[in-house]
Image (cartoon, rainbow, N blue to C red):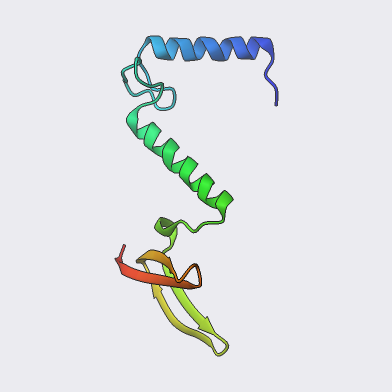
Length: 105
């Protein structure tokens, strides 16, 4: 969706006013305008969002989001644990996947 010239001008004025007042472009927090356009909390959220996008594109698993482990074989469910933190490790040139249950969340 392309912006019209008036919408683009309005957006630029809005950003210029926010920066002149020393405000984060997302959450109105006072910031040092010489360093960033966003506050530290918004920068951290942005980095986390970009990390999740990179992992999804690469087909990787985000360990922080895993909350339940299930082990299933041809006979059905053998082991299940909820509300656990997980650490994933790959060994033997990618032939072995190890799941370490670290503890409760």
